[in-house]
Amino acid sequence: MQARRFHSIMRVMQDQEENREEKTEDFSFMKEKIKEKPLNKRKIVSRVLLTLLCAVIFGVVASLVIAFLLPRLQKKITLEEEPEMIVIPRDERIPETESESESETEPETETEESTEEPSTEEILSTEPVEVADLLPEQQQNLRKQLYAIGEEANRFIVTVTGVKSDTDWFNAVYSSEDKASGAIVANTGDEILIVTENKVIRGAETVKVTFIDGETTDATLKGADGVTGIAVLTVPVQSVKEETLQEIKTATLANSLNVTEGTTVLALGSPLGTNFTVLTGSITGTGESLFLADAVFTVFQTDIITANSGNGVLVNLDGEIIGFMRKENASVGTIAAISVSELKSLLEKLENGLEVPYLGLYISTVTKSIADEYDLPQGVFINSVEMDSPGMEANLLSGDVIVEMDGIKVTDAEGYRTALFEHAPGDTIRIVIERLGSEGYTKVSCTATVGTSE
Image (cartoon, rainbow, N blue to C red; front, side, top):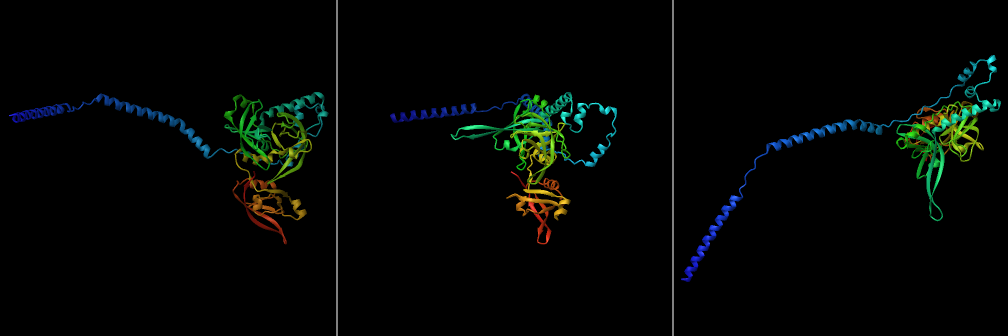
């Protein structure tokens, strides 16, 4: 009986469990049924319109930005690809016949007006006269006008300072400064270019330029020539105050090929060791030459006293530069300067940041009279060849006479330098020489690779 009762209870419990599972399944099925949410068409349209509006605004802004920046970007890219080159026109010597014809047109007869005293303007515009011959008042007016010319020209003079660091015996670091004068020779609108001495800035950690109004700014090296010792610095225009830009000016490089003895000149810079000095004097000699590698320069000697550390420029009565001072070639205690006309091809290279071509030949011109007297070919005589120079590598020798370069006849040192400056370092140049042998002079052709001076 108990066993039967136990089975009955178990059957009842199983039935109850089965009924509970069926109810749970029905309940879960009903709860998990998902009903689709209806679409909100208004919100979708709003989002589409907002996206289209953003796209329109982005397109308009992008078009404006491109329209504004594209011309400037194209201009910048064009400038980077084809930078505008600085060109310095070359000078030509004025034939003496022209000056003679001008003098012939001057009146030869004296009139009653000729007894009148000349004005200061007439004194400055005619041949130099002895100051002692003038009346005291005329002397005073003359000096005032000369110094006025110098003061105006001083606006293109600057002081260049090279700052170097070194250590003493106790390993203490100290700074030293070298100073020299410089001249503003160009203003491109983006940069101011200044000619100075390379020895002042060689090895300098920083280079500073001080203008006529005392304003100082940093400068960097644009180019330098190891032969002449001339360097060109660059100063960004944007780094110079507007007030200073109004005070300074750019120098004019004169035609110095016809400068003669007795010409009145002014020395600017630091001829006495102090910058922005104005000294007056005259040219006492134009016949001396300076022989450097690949060049022969005319040297102007003056009667202007100078200091051992002095440097600067010579200017004429128009305030134009006619020469750059070179103390190494001055007479004892007086100023000497290299003719600026013969430096223009070099300055053009340096102002454009180009390397100066170099062969390392010391040359002189074989004129027709010299050729006839010494039985030499007419051309450019090689006095000597620098060691380890491109000229030596091309087997050029002392005593050779250059008669042709790249198929063009060469008759003097100026023509040689012109032909050389048509090339850049790394170019090859074909040189024809006349070389002396057992049977006299014979033509020899060689090829030289142009180098650069350090």
